[in-house]
Length: 191
Image 1 (cartoon, one colour):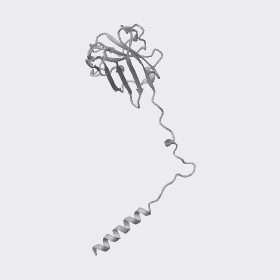
Image 2 (cartoon, helix red, strand yellow):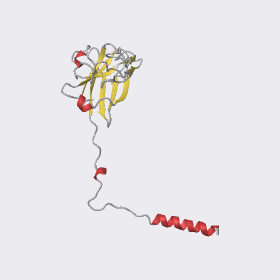
Image 3 (cartoon, helix red, strand yellow):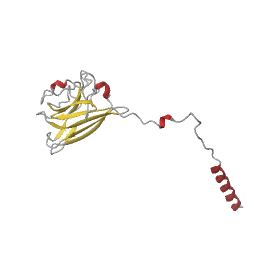
Image 4 (tube, one colour):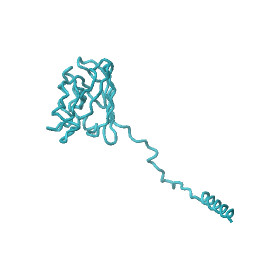
């Protein structure tokens, strides 16, 4: 008796596999979504200038589905080792070499709103600190959901500023990060 049961179960399983229906799209109903690739993400970037105004690295920003991926590459010997504050500034102007005040205030600046740890913040331009290695180089990648690239690249542009000290992410207006030591104008299609 057990042998007949095993044989019958195998026959039923085999029959179920061979009678599965196949589906083919009806003529004129092709799946067009599979034929087109998603649009390429918007990209922007530029050269990172140090205090004397010489190029010390690059900045790249790529729009993602819910934020912007920012990548920074700083050449050896360019910055002092340790943590440095990093912010997006509302004006894409680094022409006052070494001071970098023409880049204006932070992107999306609000009174009392600076800081990733601030209950009244953060501002659109707030970013995590960047770590500079003993040899003065740095590599950085962070994702910010605080802003979108296209609106930030408005008529007066966008800049990325590196400060001389770390940002504590609470103190107003710049987290105690100190002077501006590097600047990059972020432009569409750059880097």
